[in-house]
Image 1 (cartoon, rainbow, N blue to C red):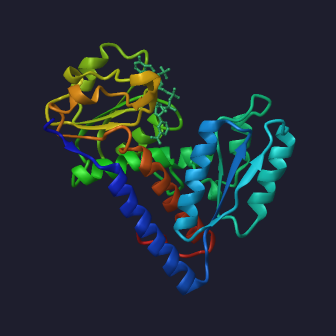
Image 2 (spheres, rainbow, N blue to C red):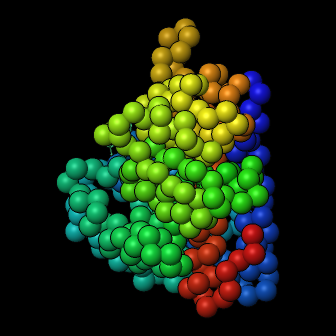
Amino acid sequence: MSARIIDGKTIAADLRGKAADAVHRLRGDRGVVPGIAVVLVGDNPASEVYVRNKSKAVTESGMHAFDRKLPSSISEVELLAIIAELNADEEVNGILVQLPLPKQIDTQKIIAAIDPGKDVDGFHPLNAGRLASGLPGLAPCTPLGCVFLAKTVHETLAGLEAVVIGRSNIVGKPVAQLLLAENATVTIAHSKTNDLPSVCRRADLLVAAIGRPEMVRGDWIKPGATVIDVGINRVPGENGKSRIVGDVAYTEAGPIAGAITPVPGGVGPMTIACLLLNTLRAACAQKGLPPPKV
Ligand code: NAP
């Protein structure tokens, strides 16, 4: 393994510390304590773990956590009423609805009902449009984390050949938009891309957001490239236990890449750190204050 390992855990911890300092200053100087409402519908065990971790990080940063745990039987109308209540609540600066939602609820309708200024997940069409138009807004947390990690390796991303595999609204598209805003030359690849290995071999910066265990092989990587692996895939491990791997074959890619994120411990921890940052930004914007210095 010759690649530098991009230690997302340490970088995220540092960012969370800076967010906590900013919250402390905001409370001291302006009497403002940012608050976030995380809405969890149903009892999906993976979602429960995510929400618990998010709430812990929010509380540790000194922000207020207004969690709402709702039954899986909730109707769309009832959920919309709760979103309206949170939109109107001045103590709530950020709203995050944990996905996936039960099938009786139209996810896009719920996302569109969130006040765009409180949309700390950055999934509202207005924020997606702002990002695509180069206007200020709230961008999705995982893509923000990817770009943050890439910038720990490269002083500037300007002029880099970046390839993003994946075009979801949650990761692929917004990460591509953020890289474009950093003046990288961006290619978005997907399941219909011809000769994906050749496309990847062009990349100085490769972002894999596919959801397929270790699909990106070592010989797809340009020597010295920076590899950001967003994938979280559970595969069978030893002794009947499962383990988590990324979308990149890490042991193959390590000797070829210049820098690489591990899975776990790479992009994952950055998502929550960026959620804190987005909540801080949202709170400052709502109070007419300048953006936080983090
Ligand atoms: P998604 O909505 O399923 O999108 C996957 C994308 O990969 C699609 O655009 C799809 O192309 C593309 N793809 C699938 N198979 C492909 C193939 N054989 N060749 C090329 N492209 C292919 O997934 P997502 O929500 O973006 O998530 C991607 C991964 O990131 C998942 O493992 C997820 O668990 C992980 N994730 C991690 C975090 C974190 O905090 N670290 C956050 C979010 C997601 P088409 O559009 O053509 O179908």
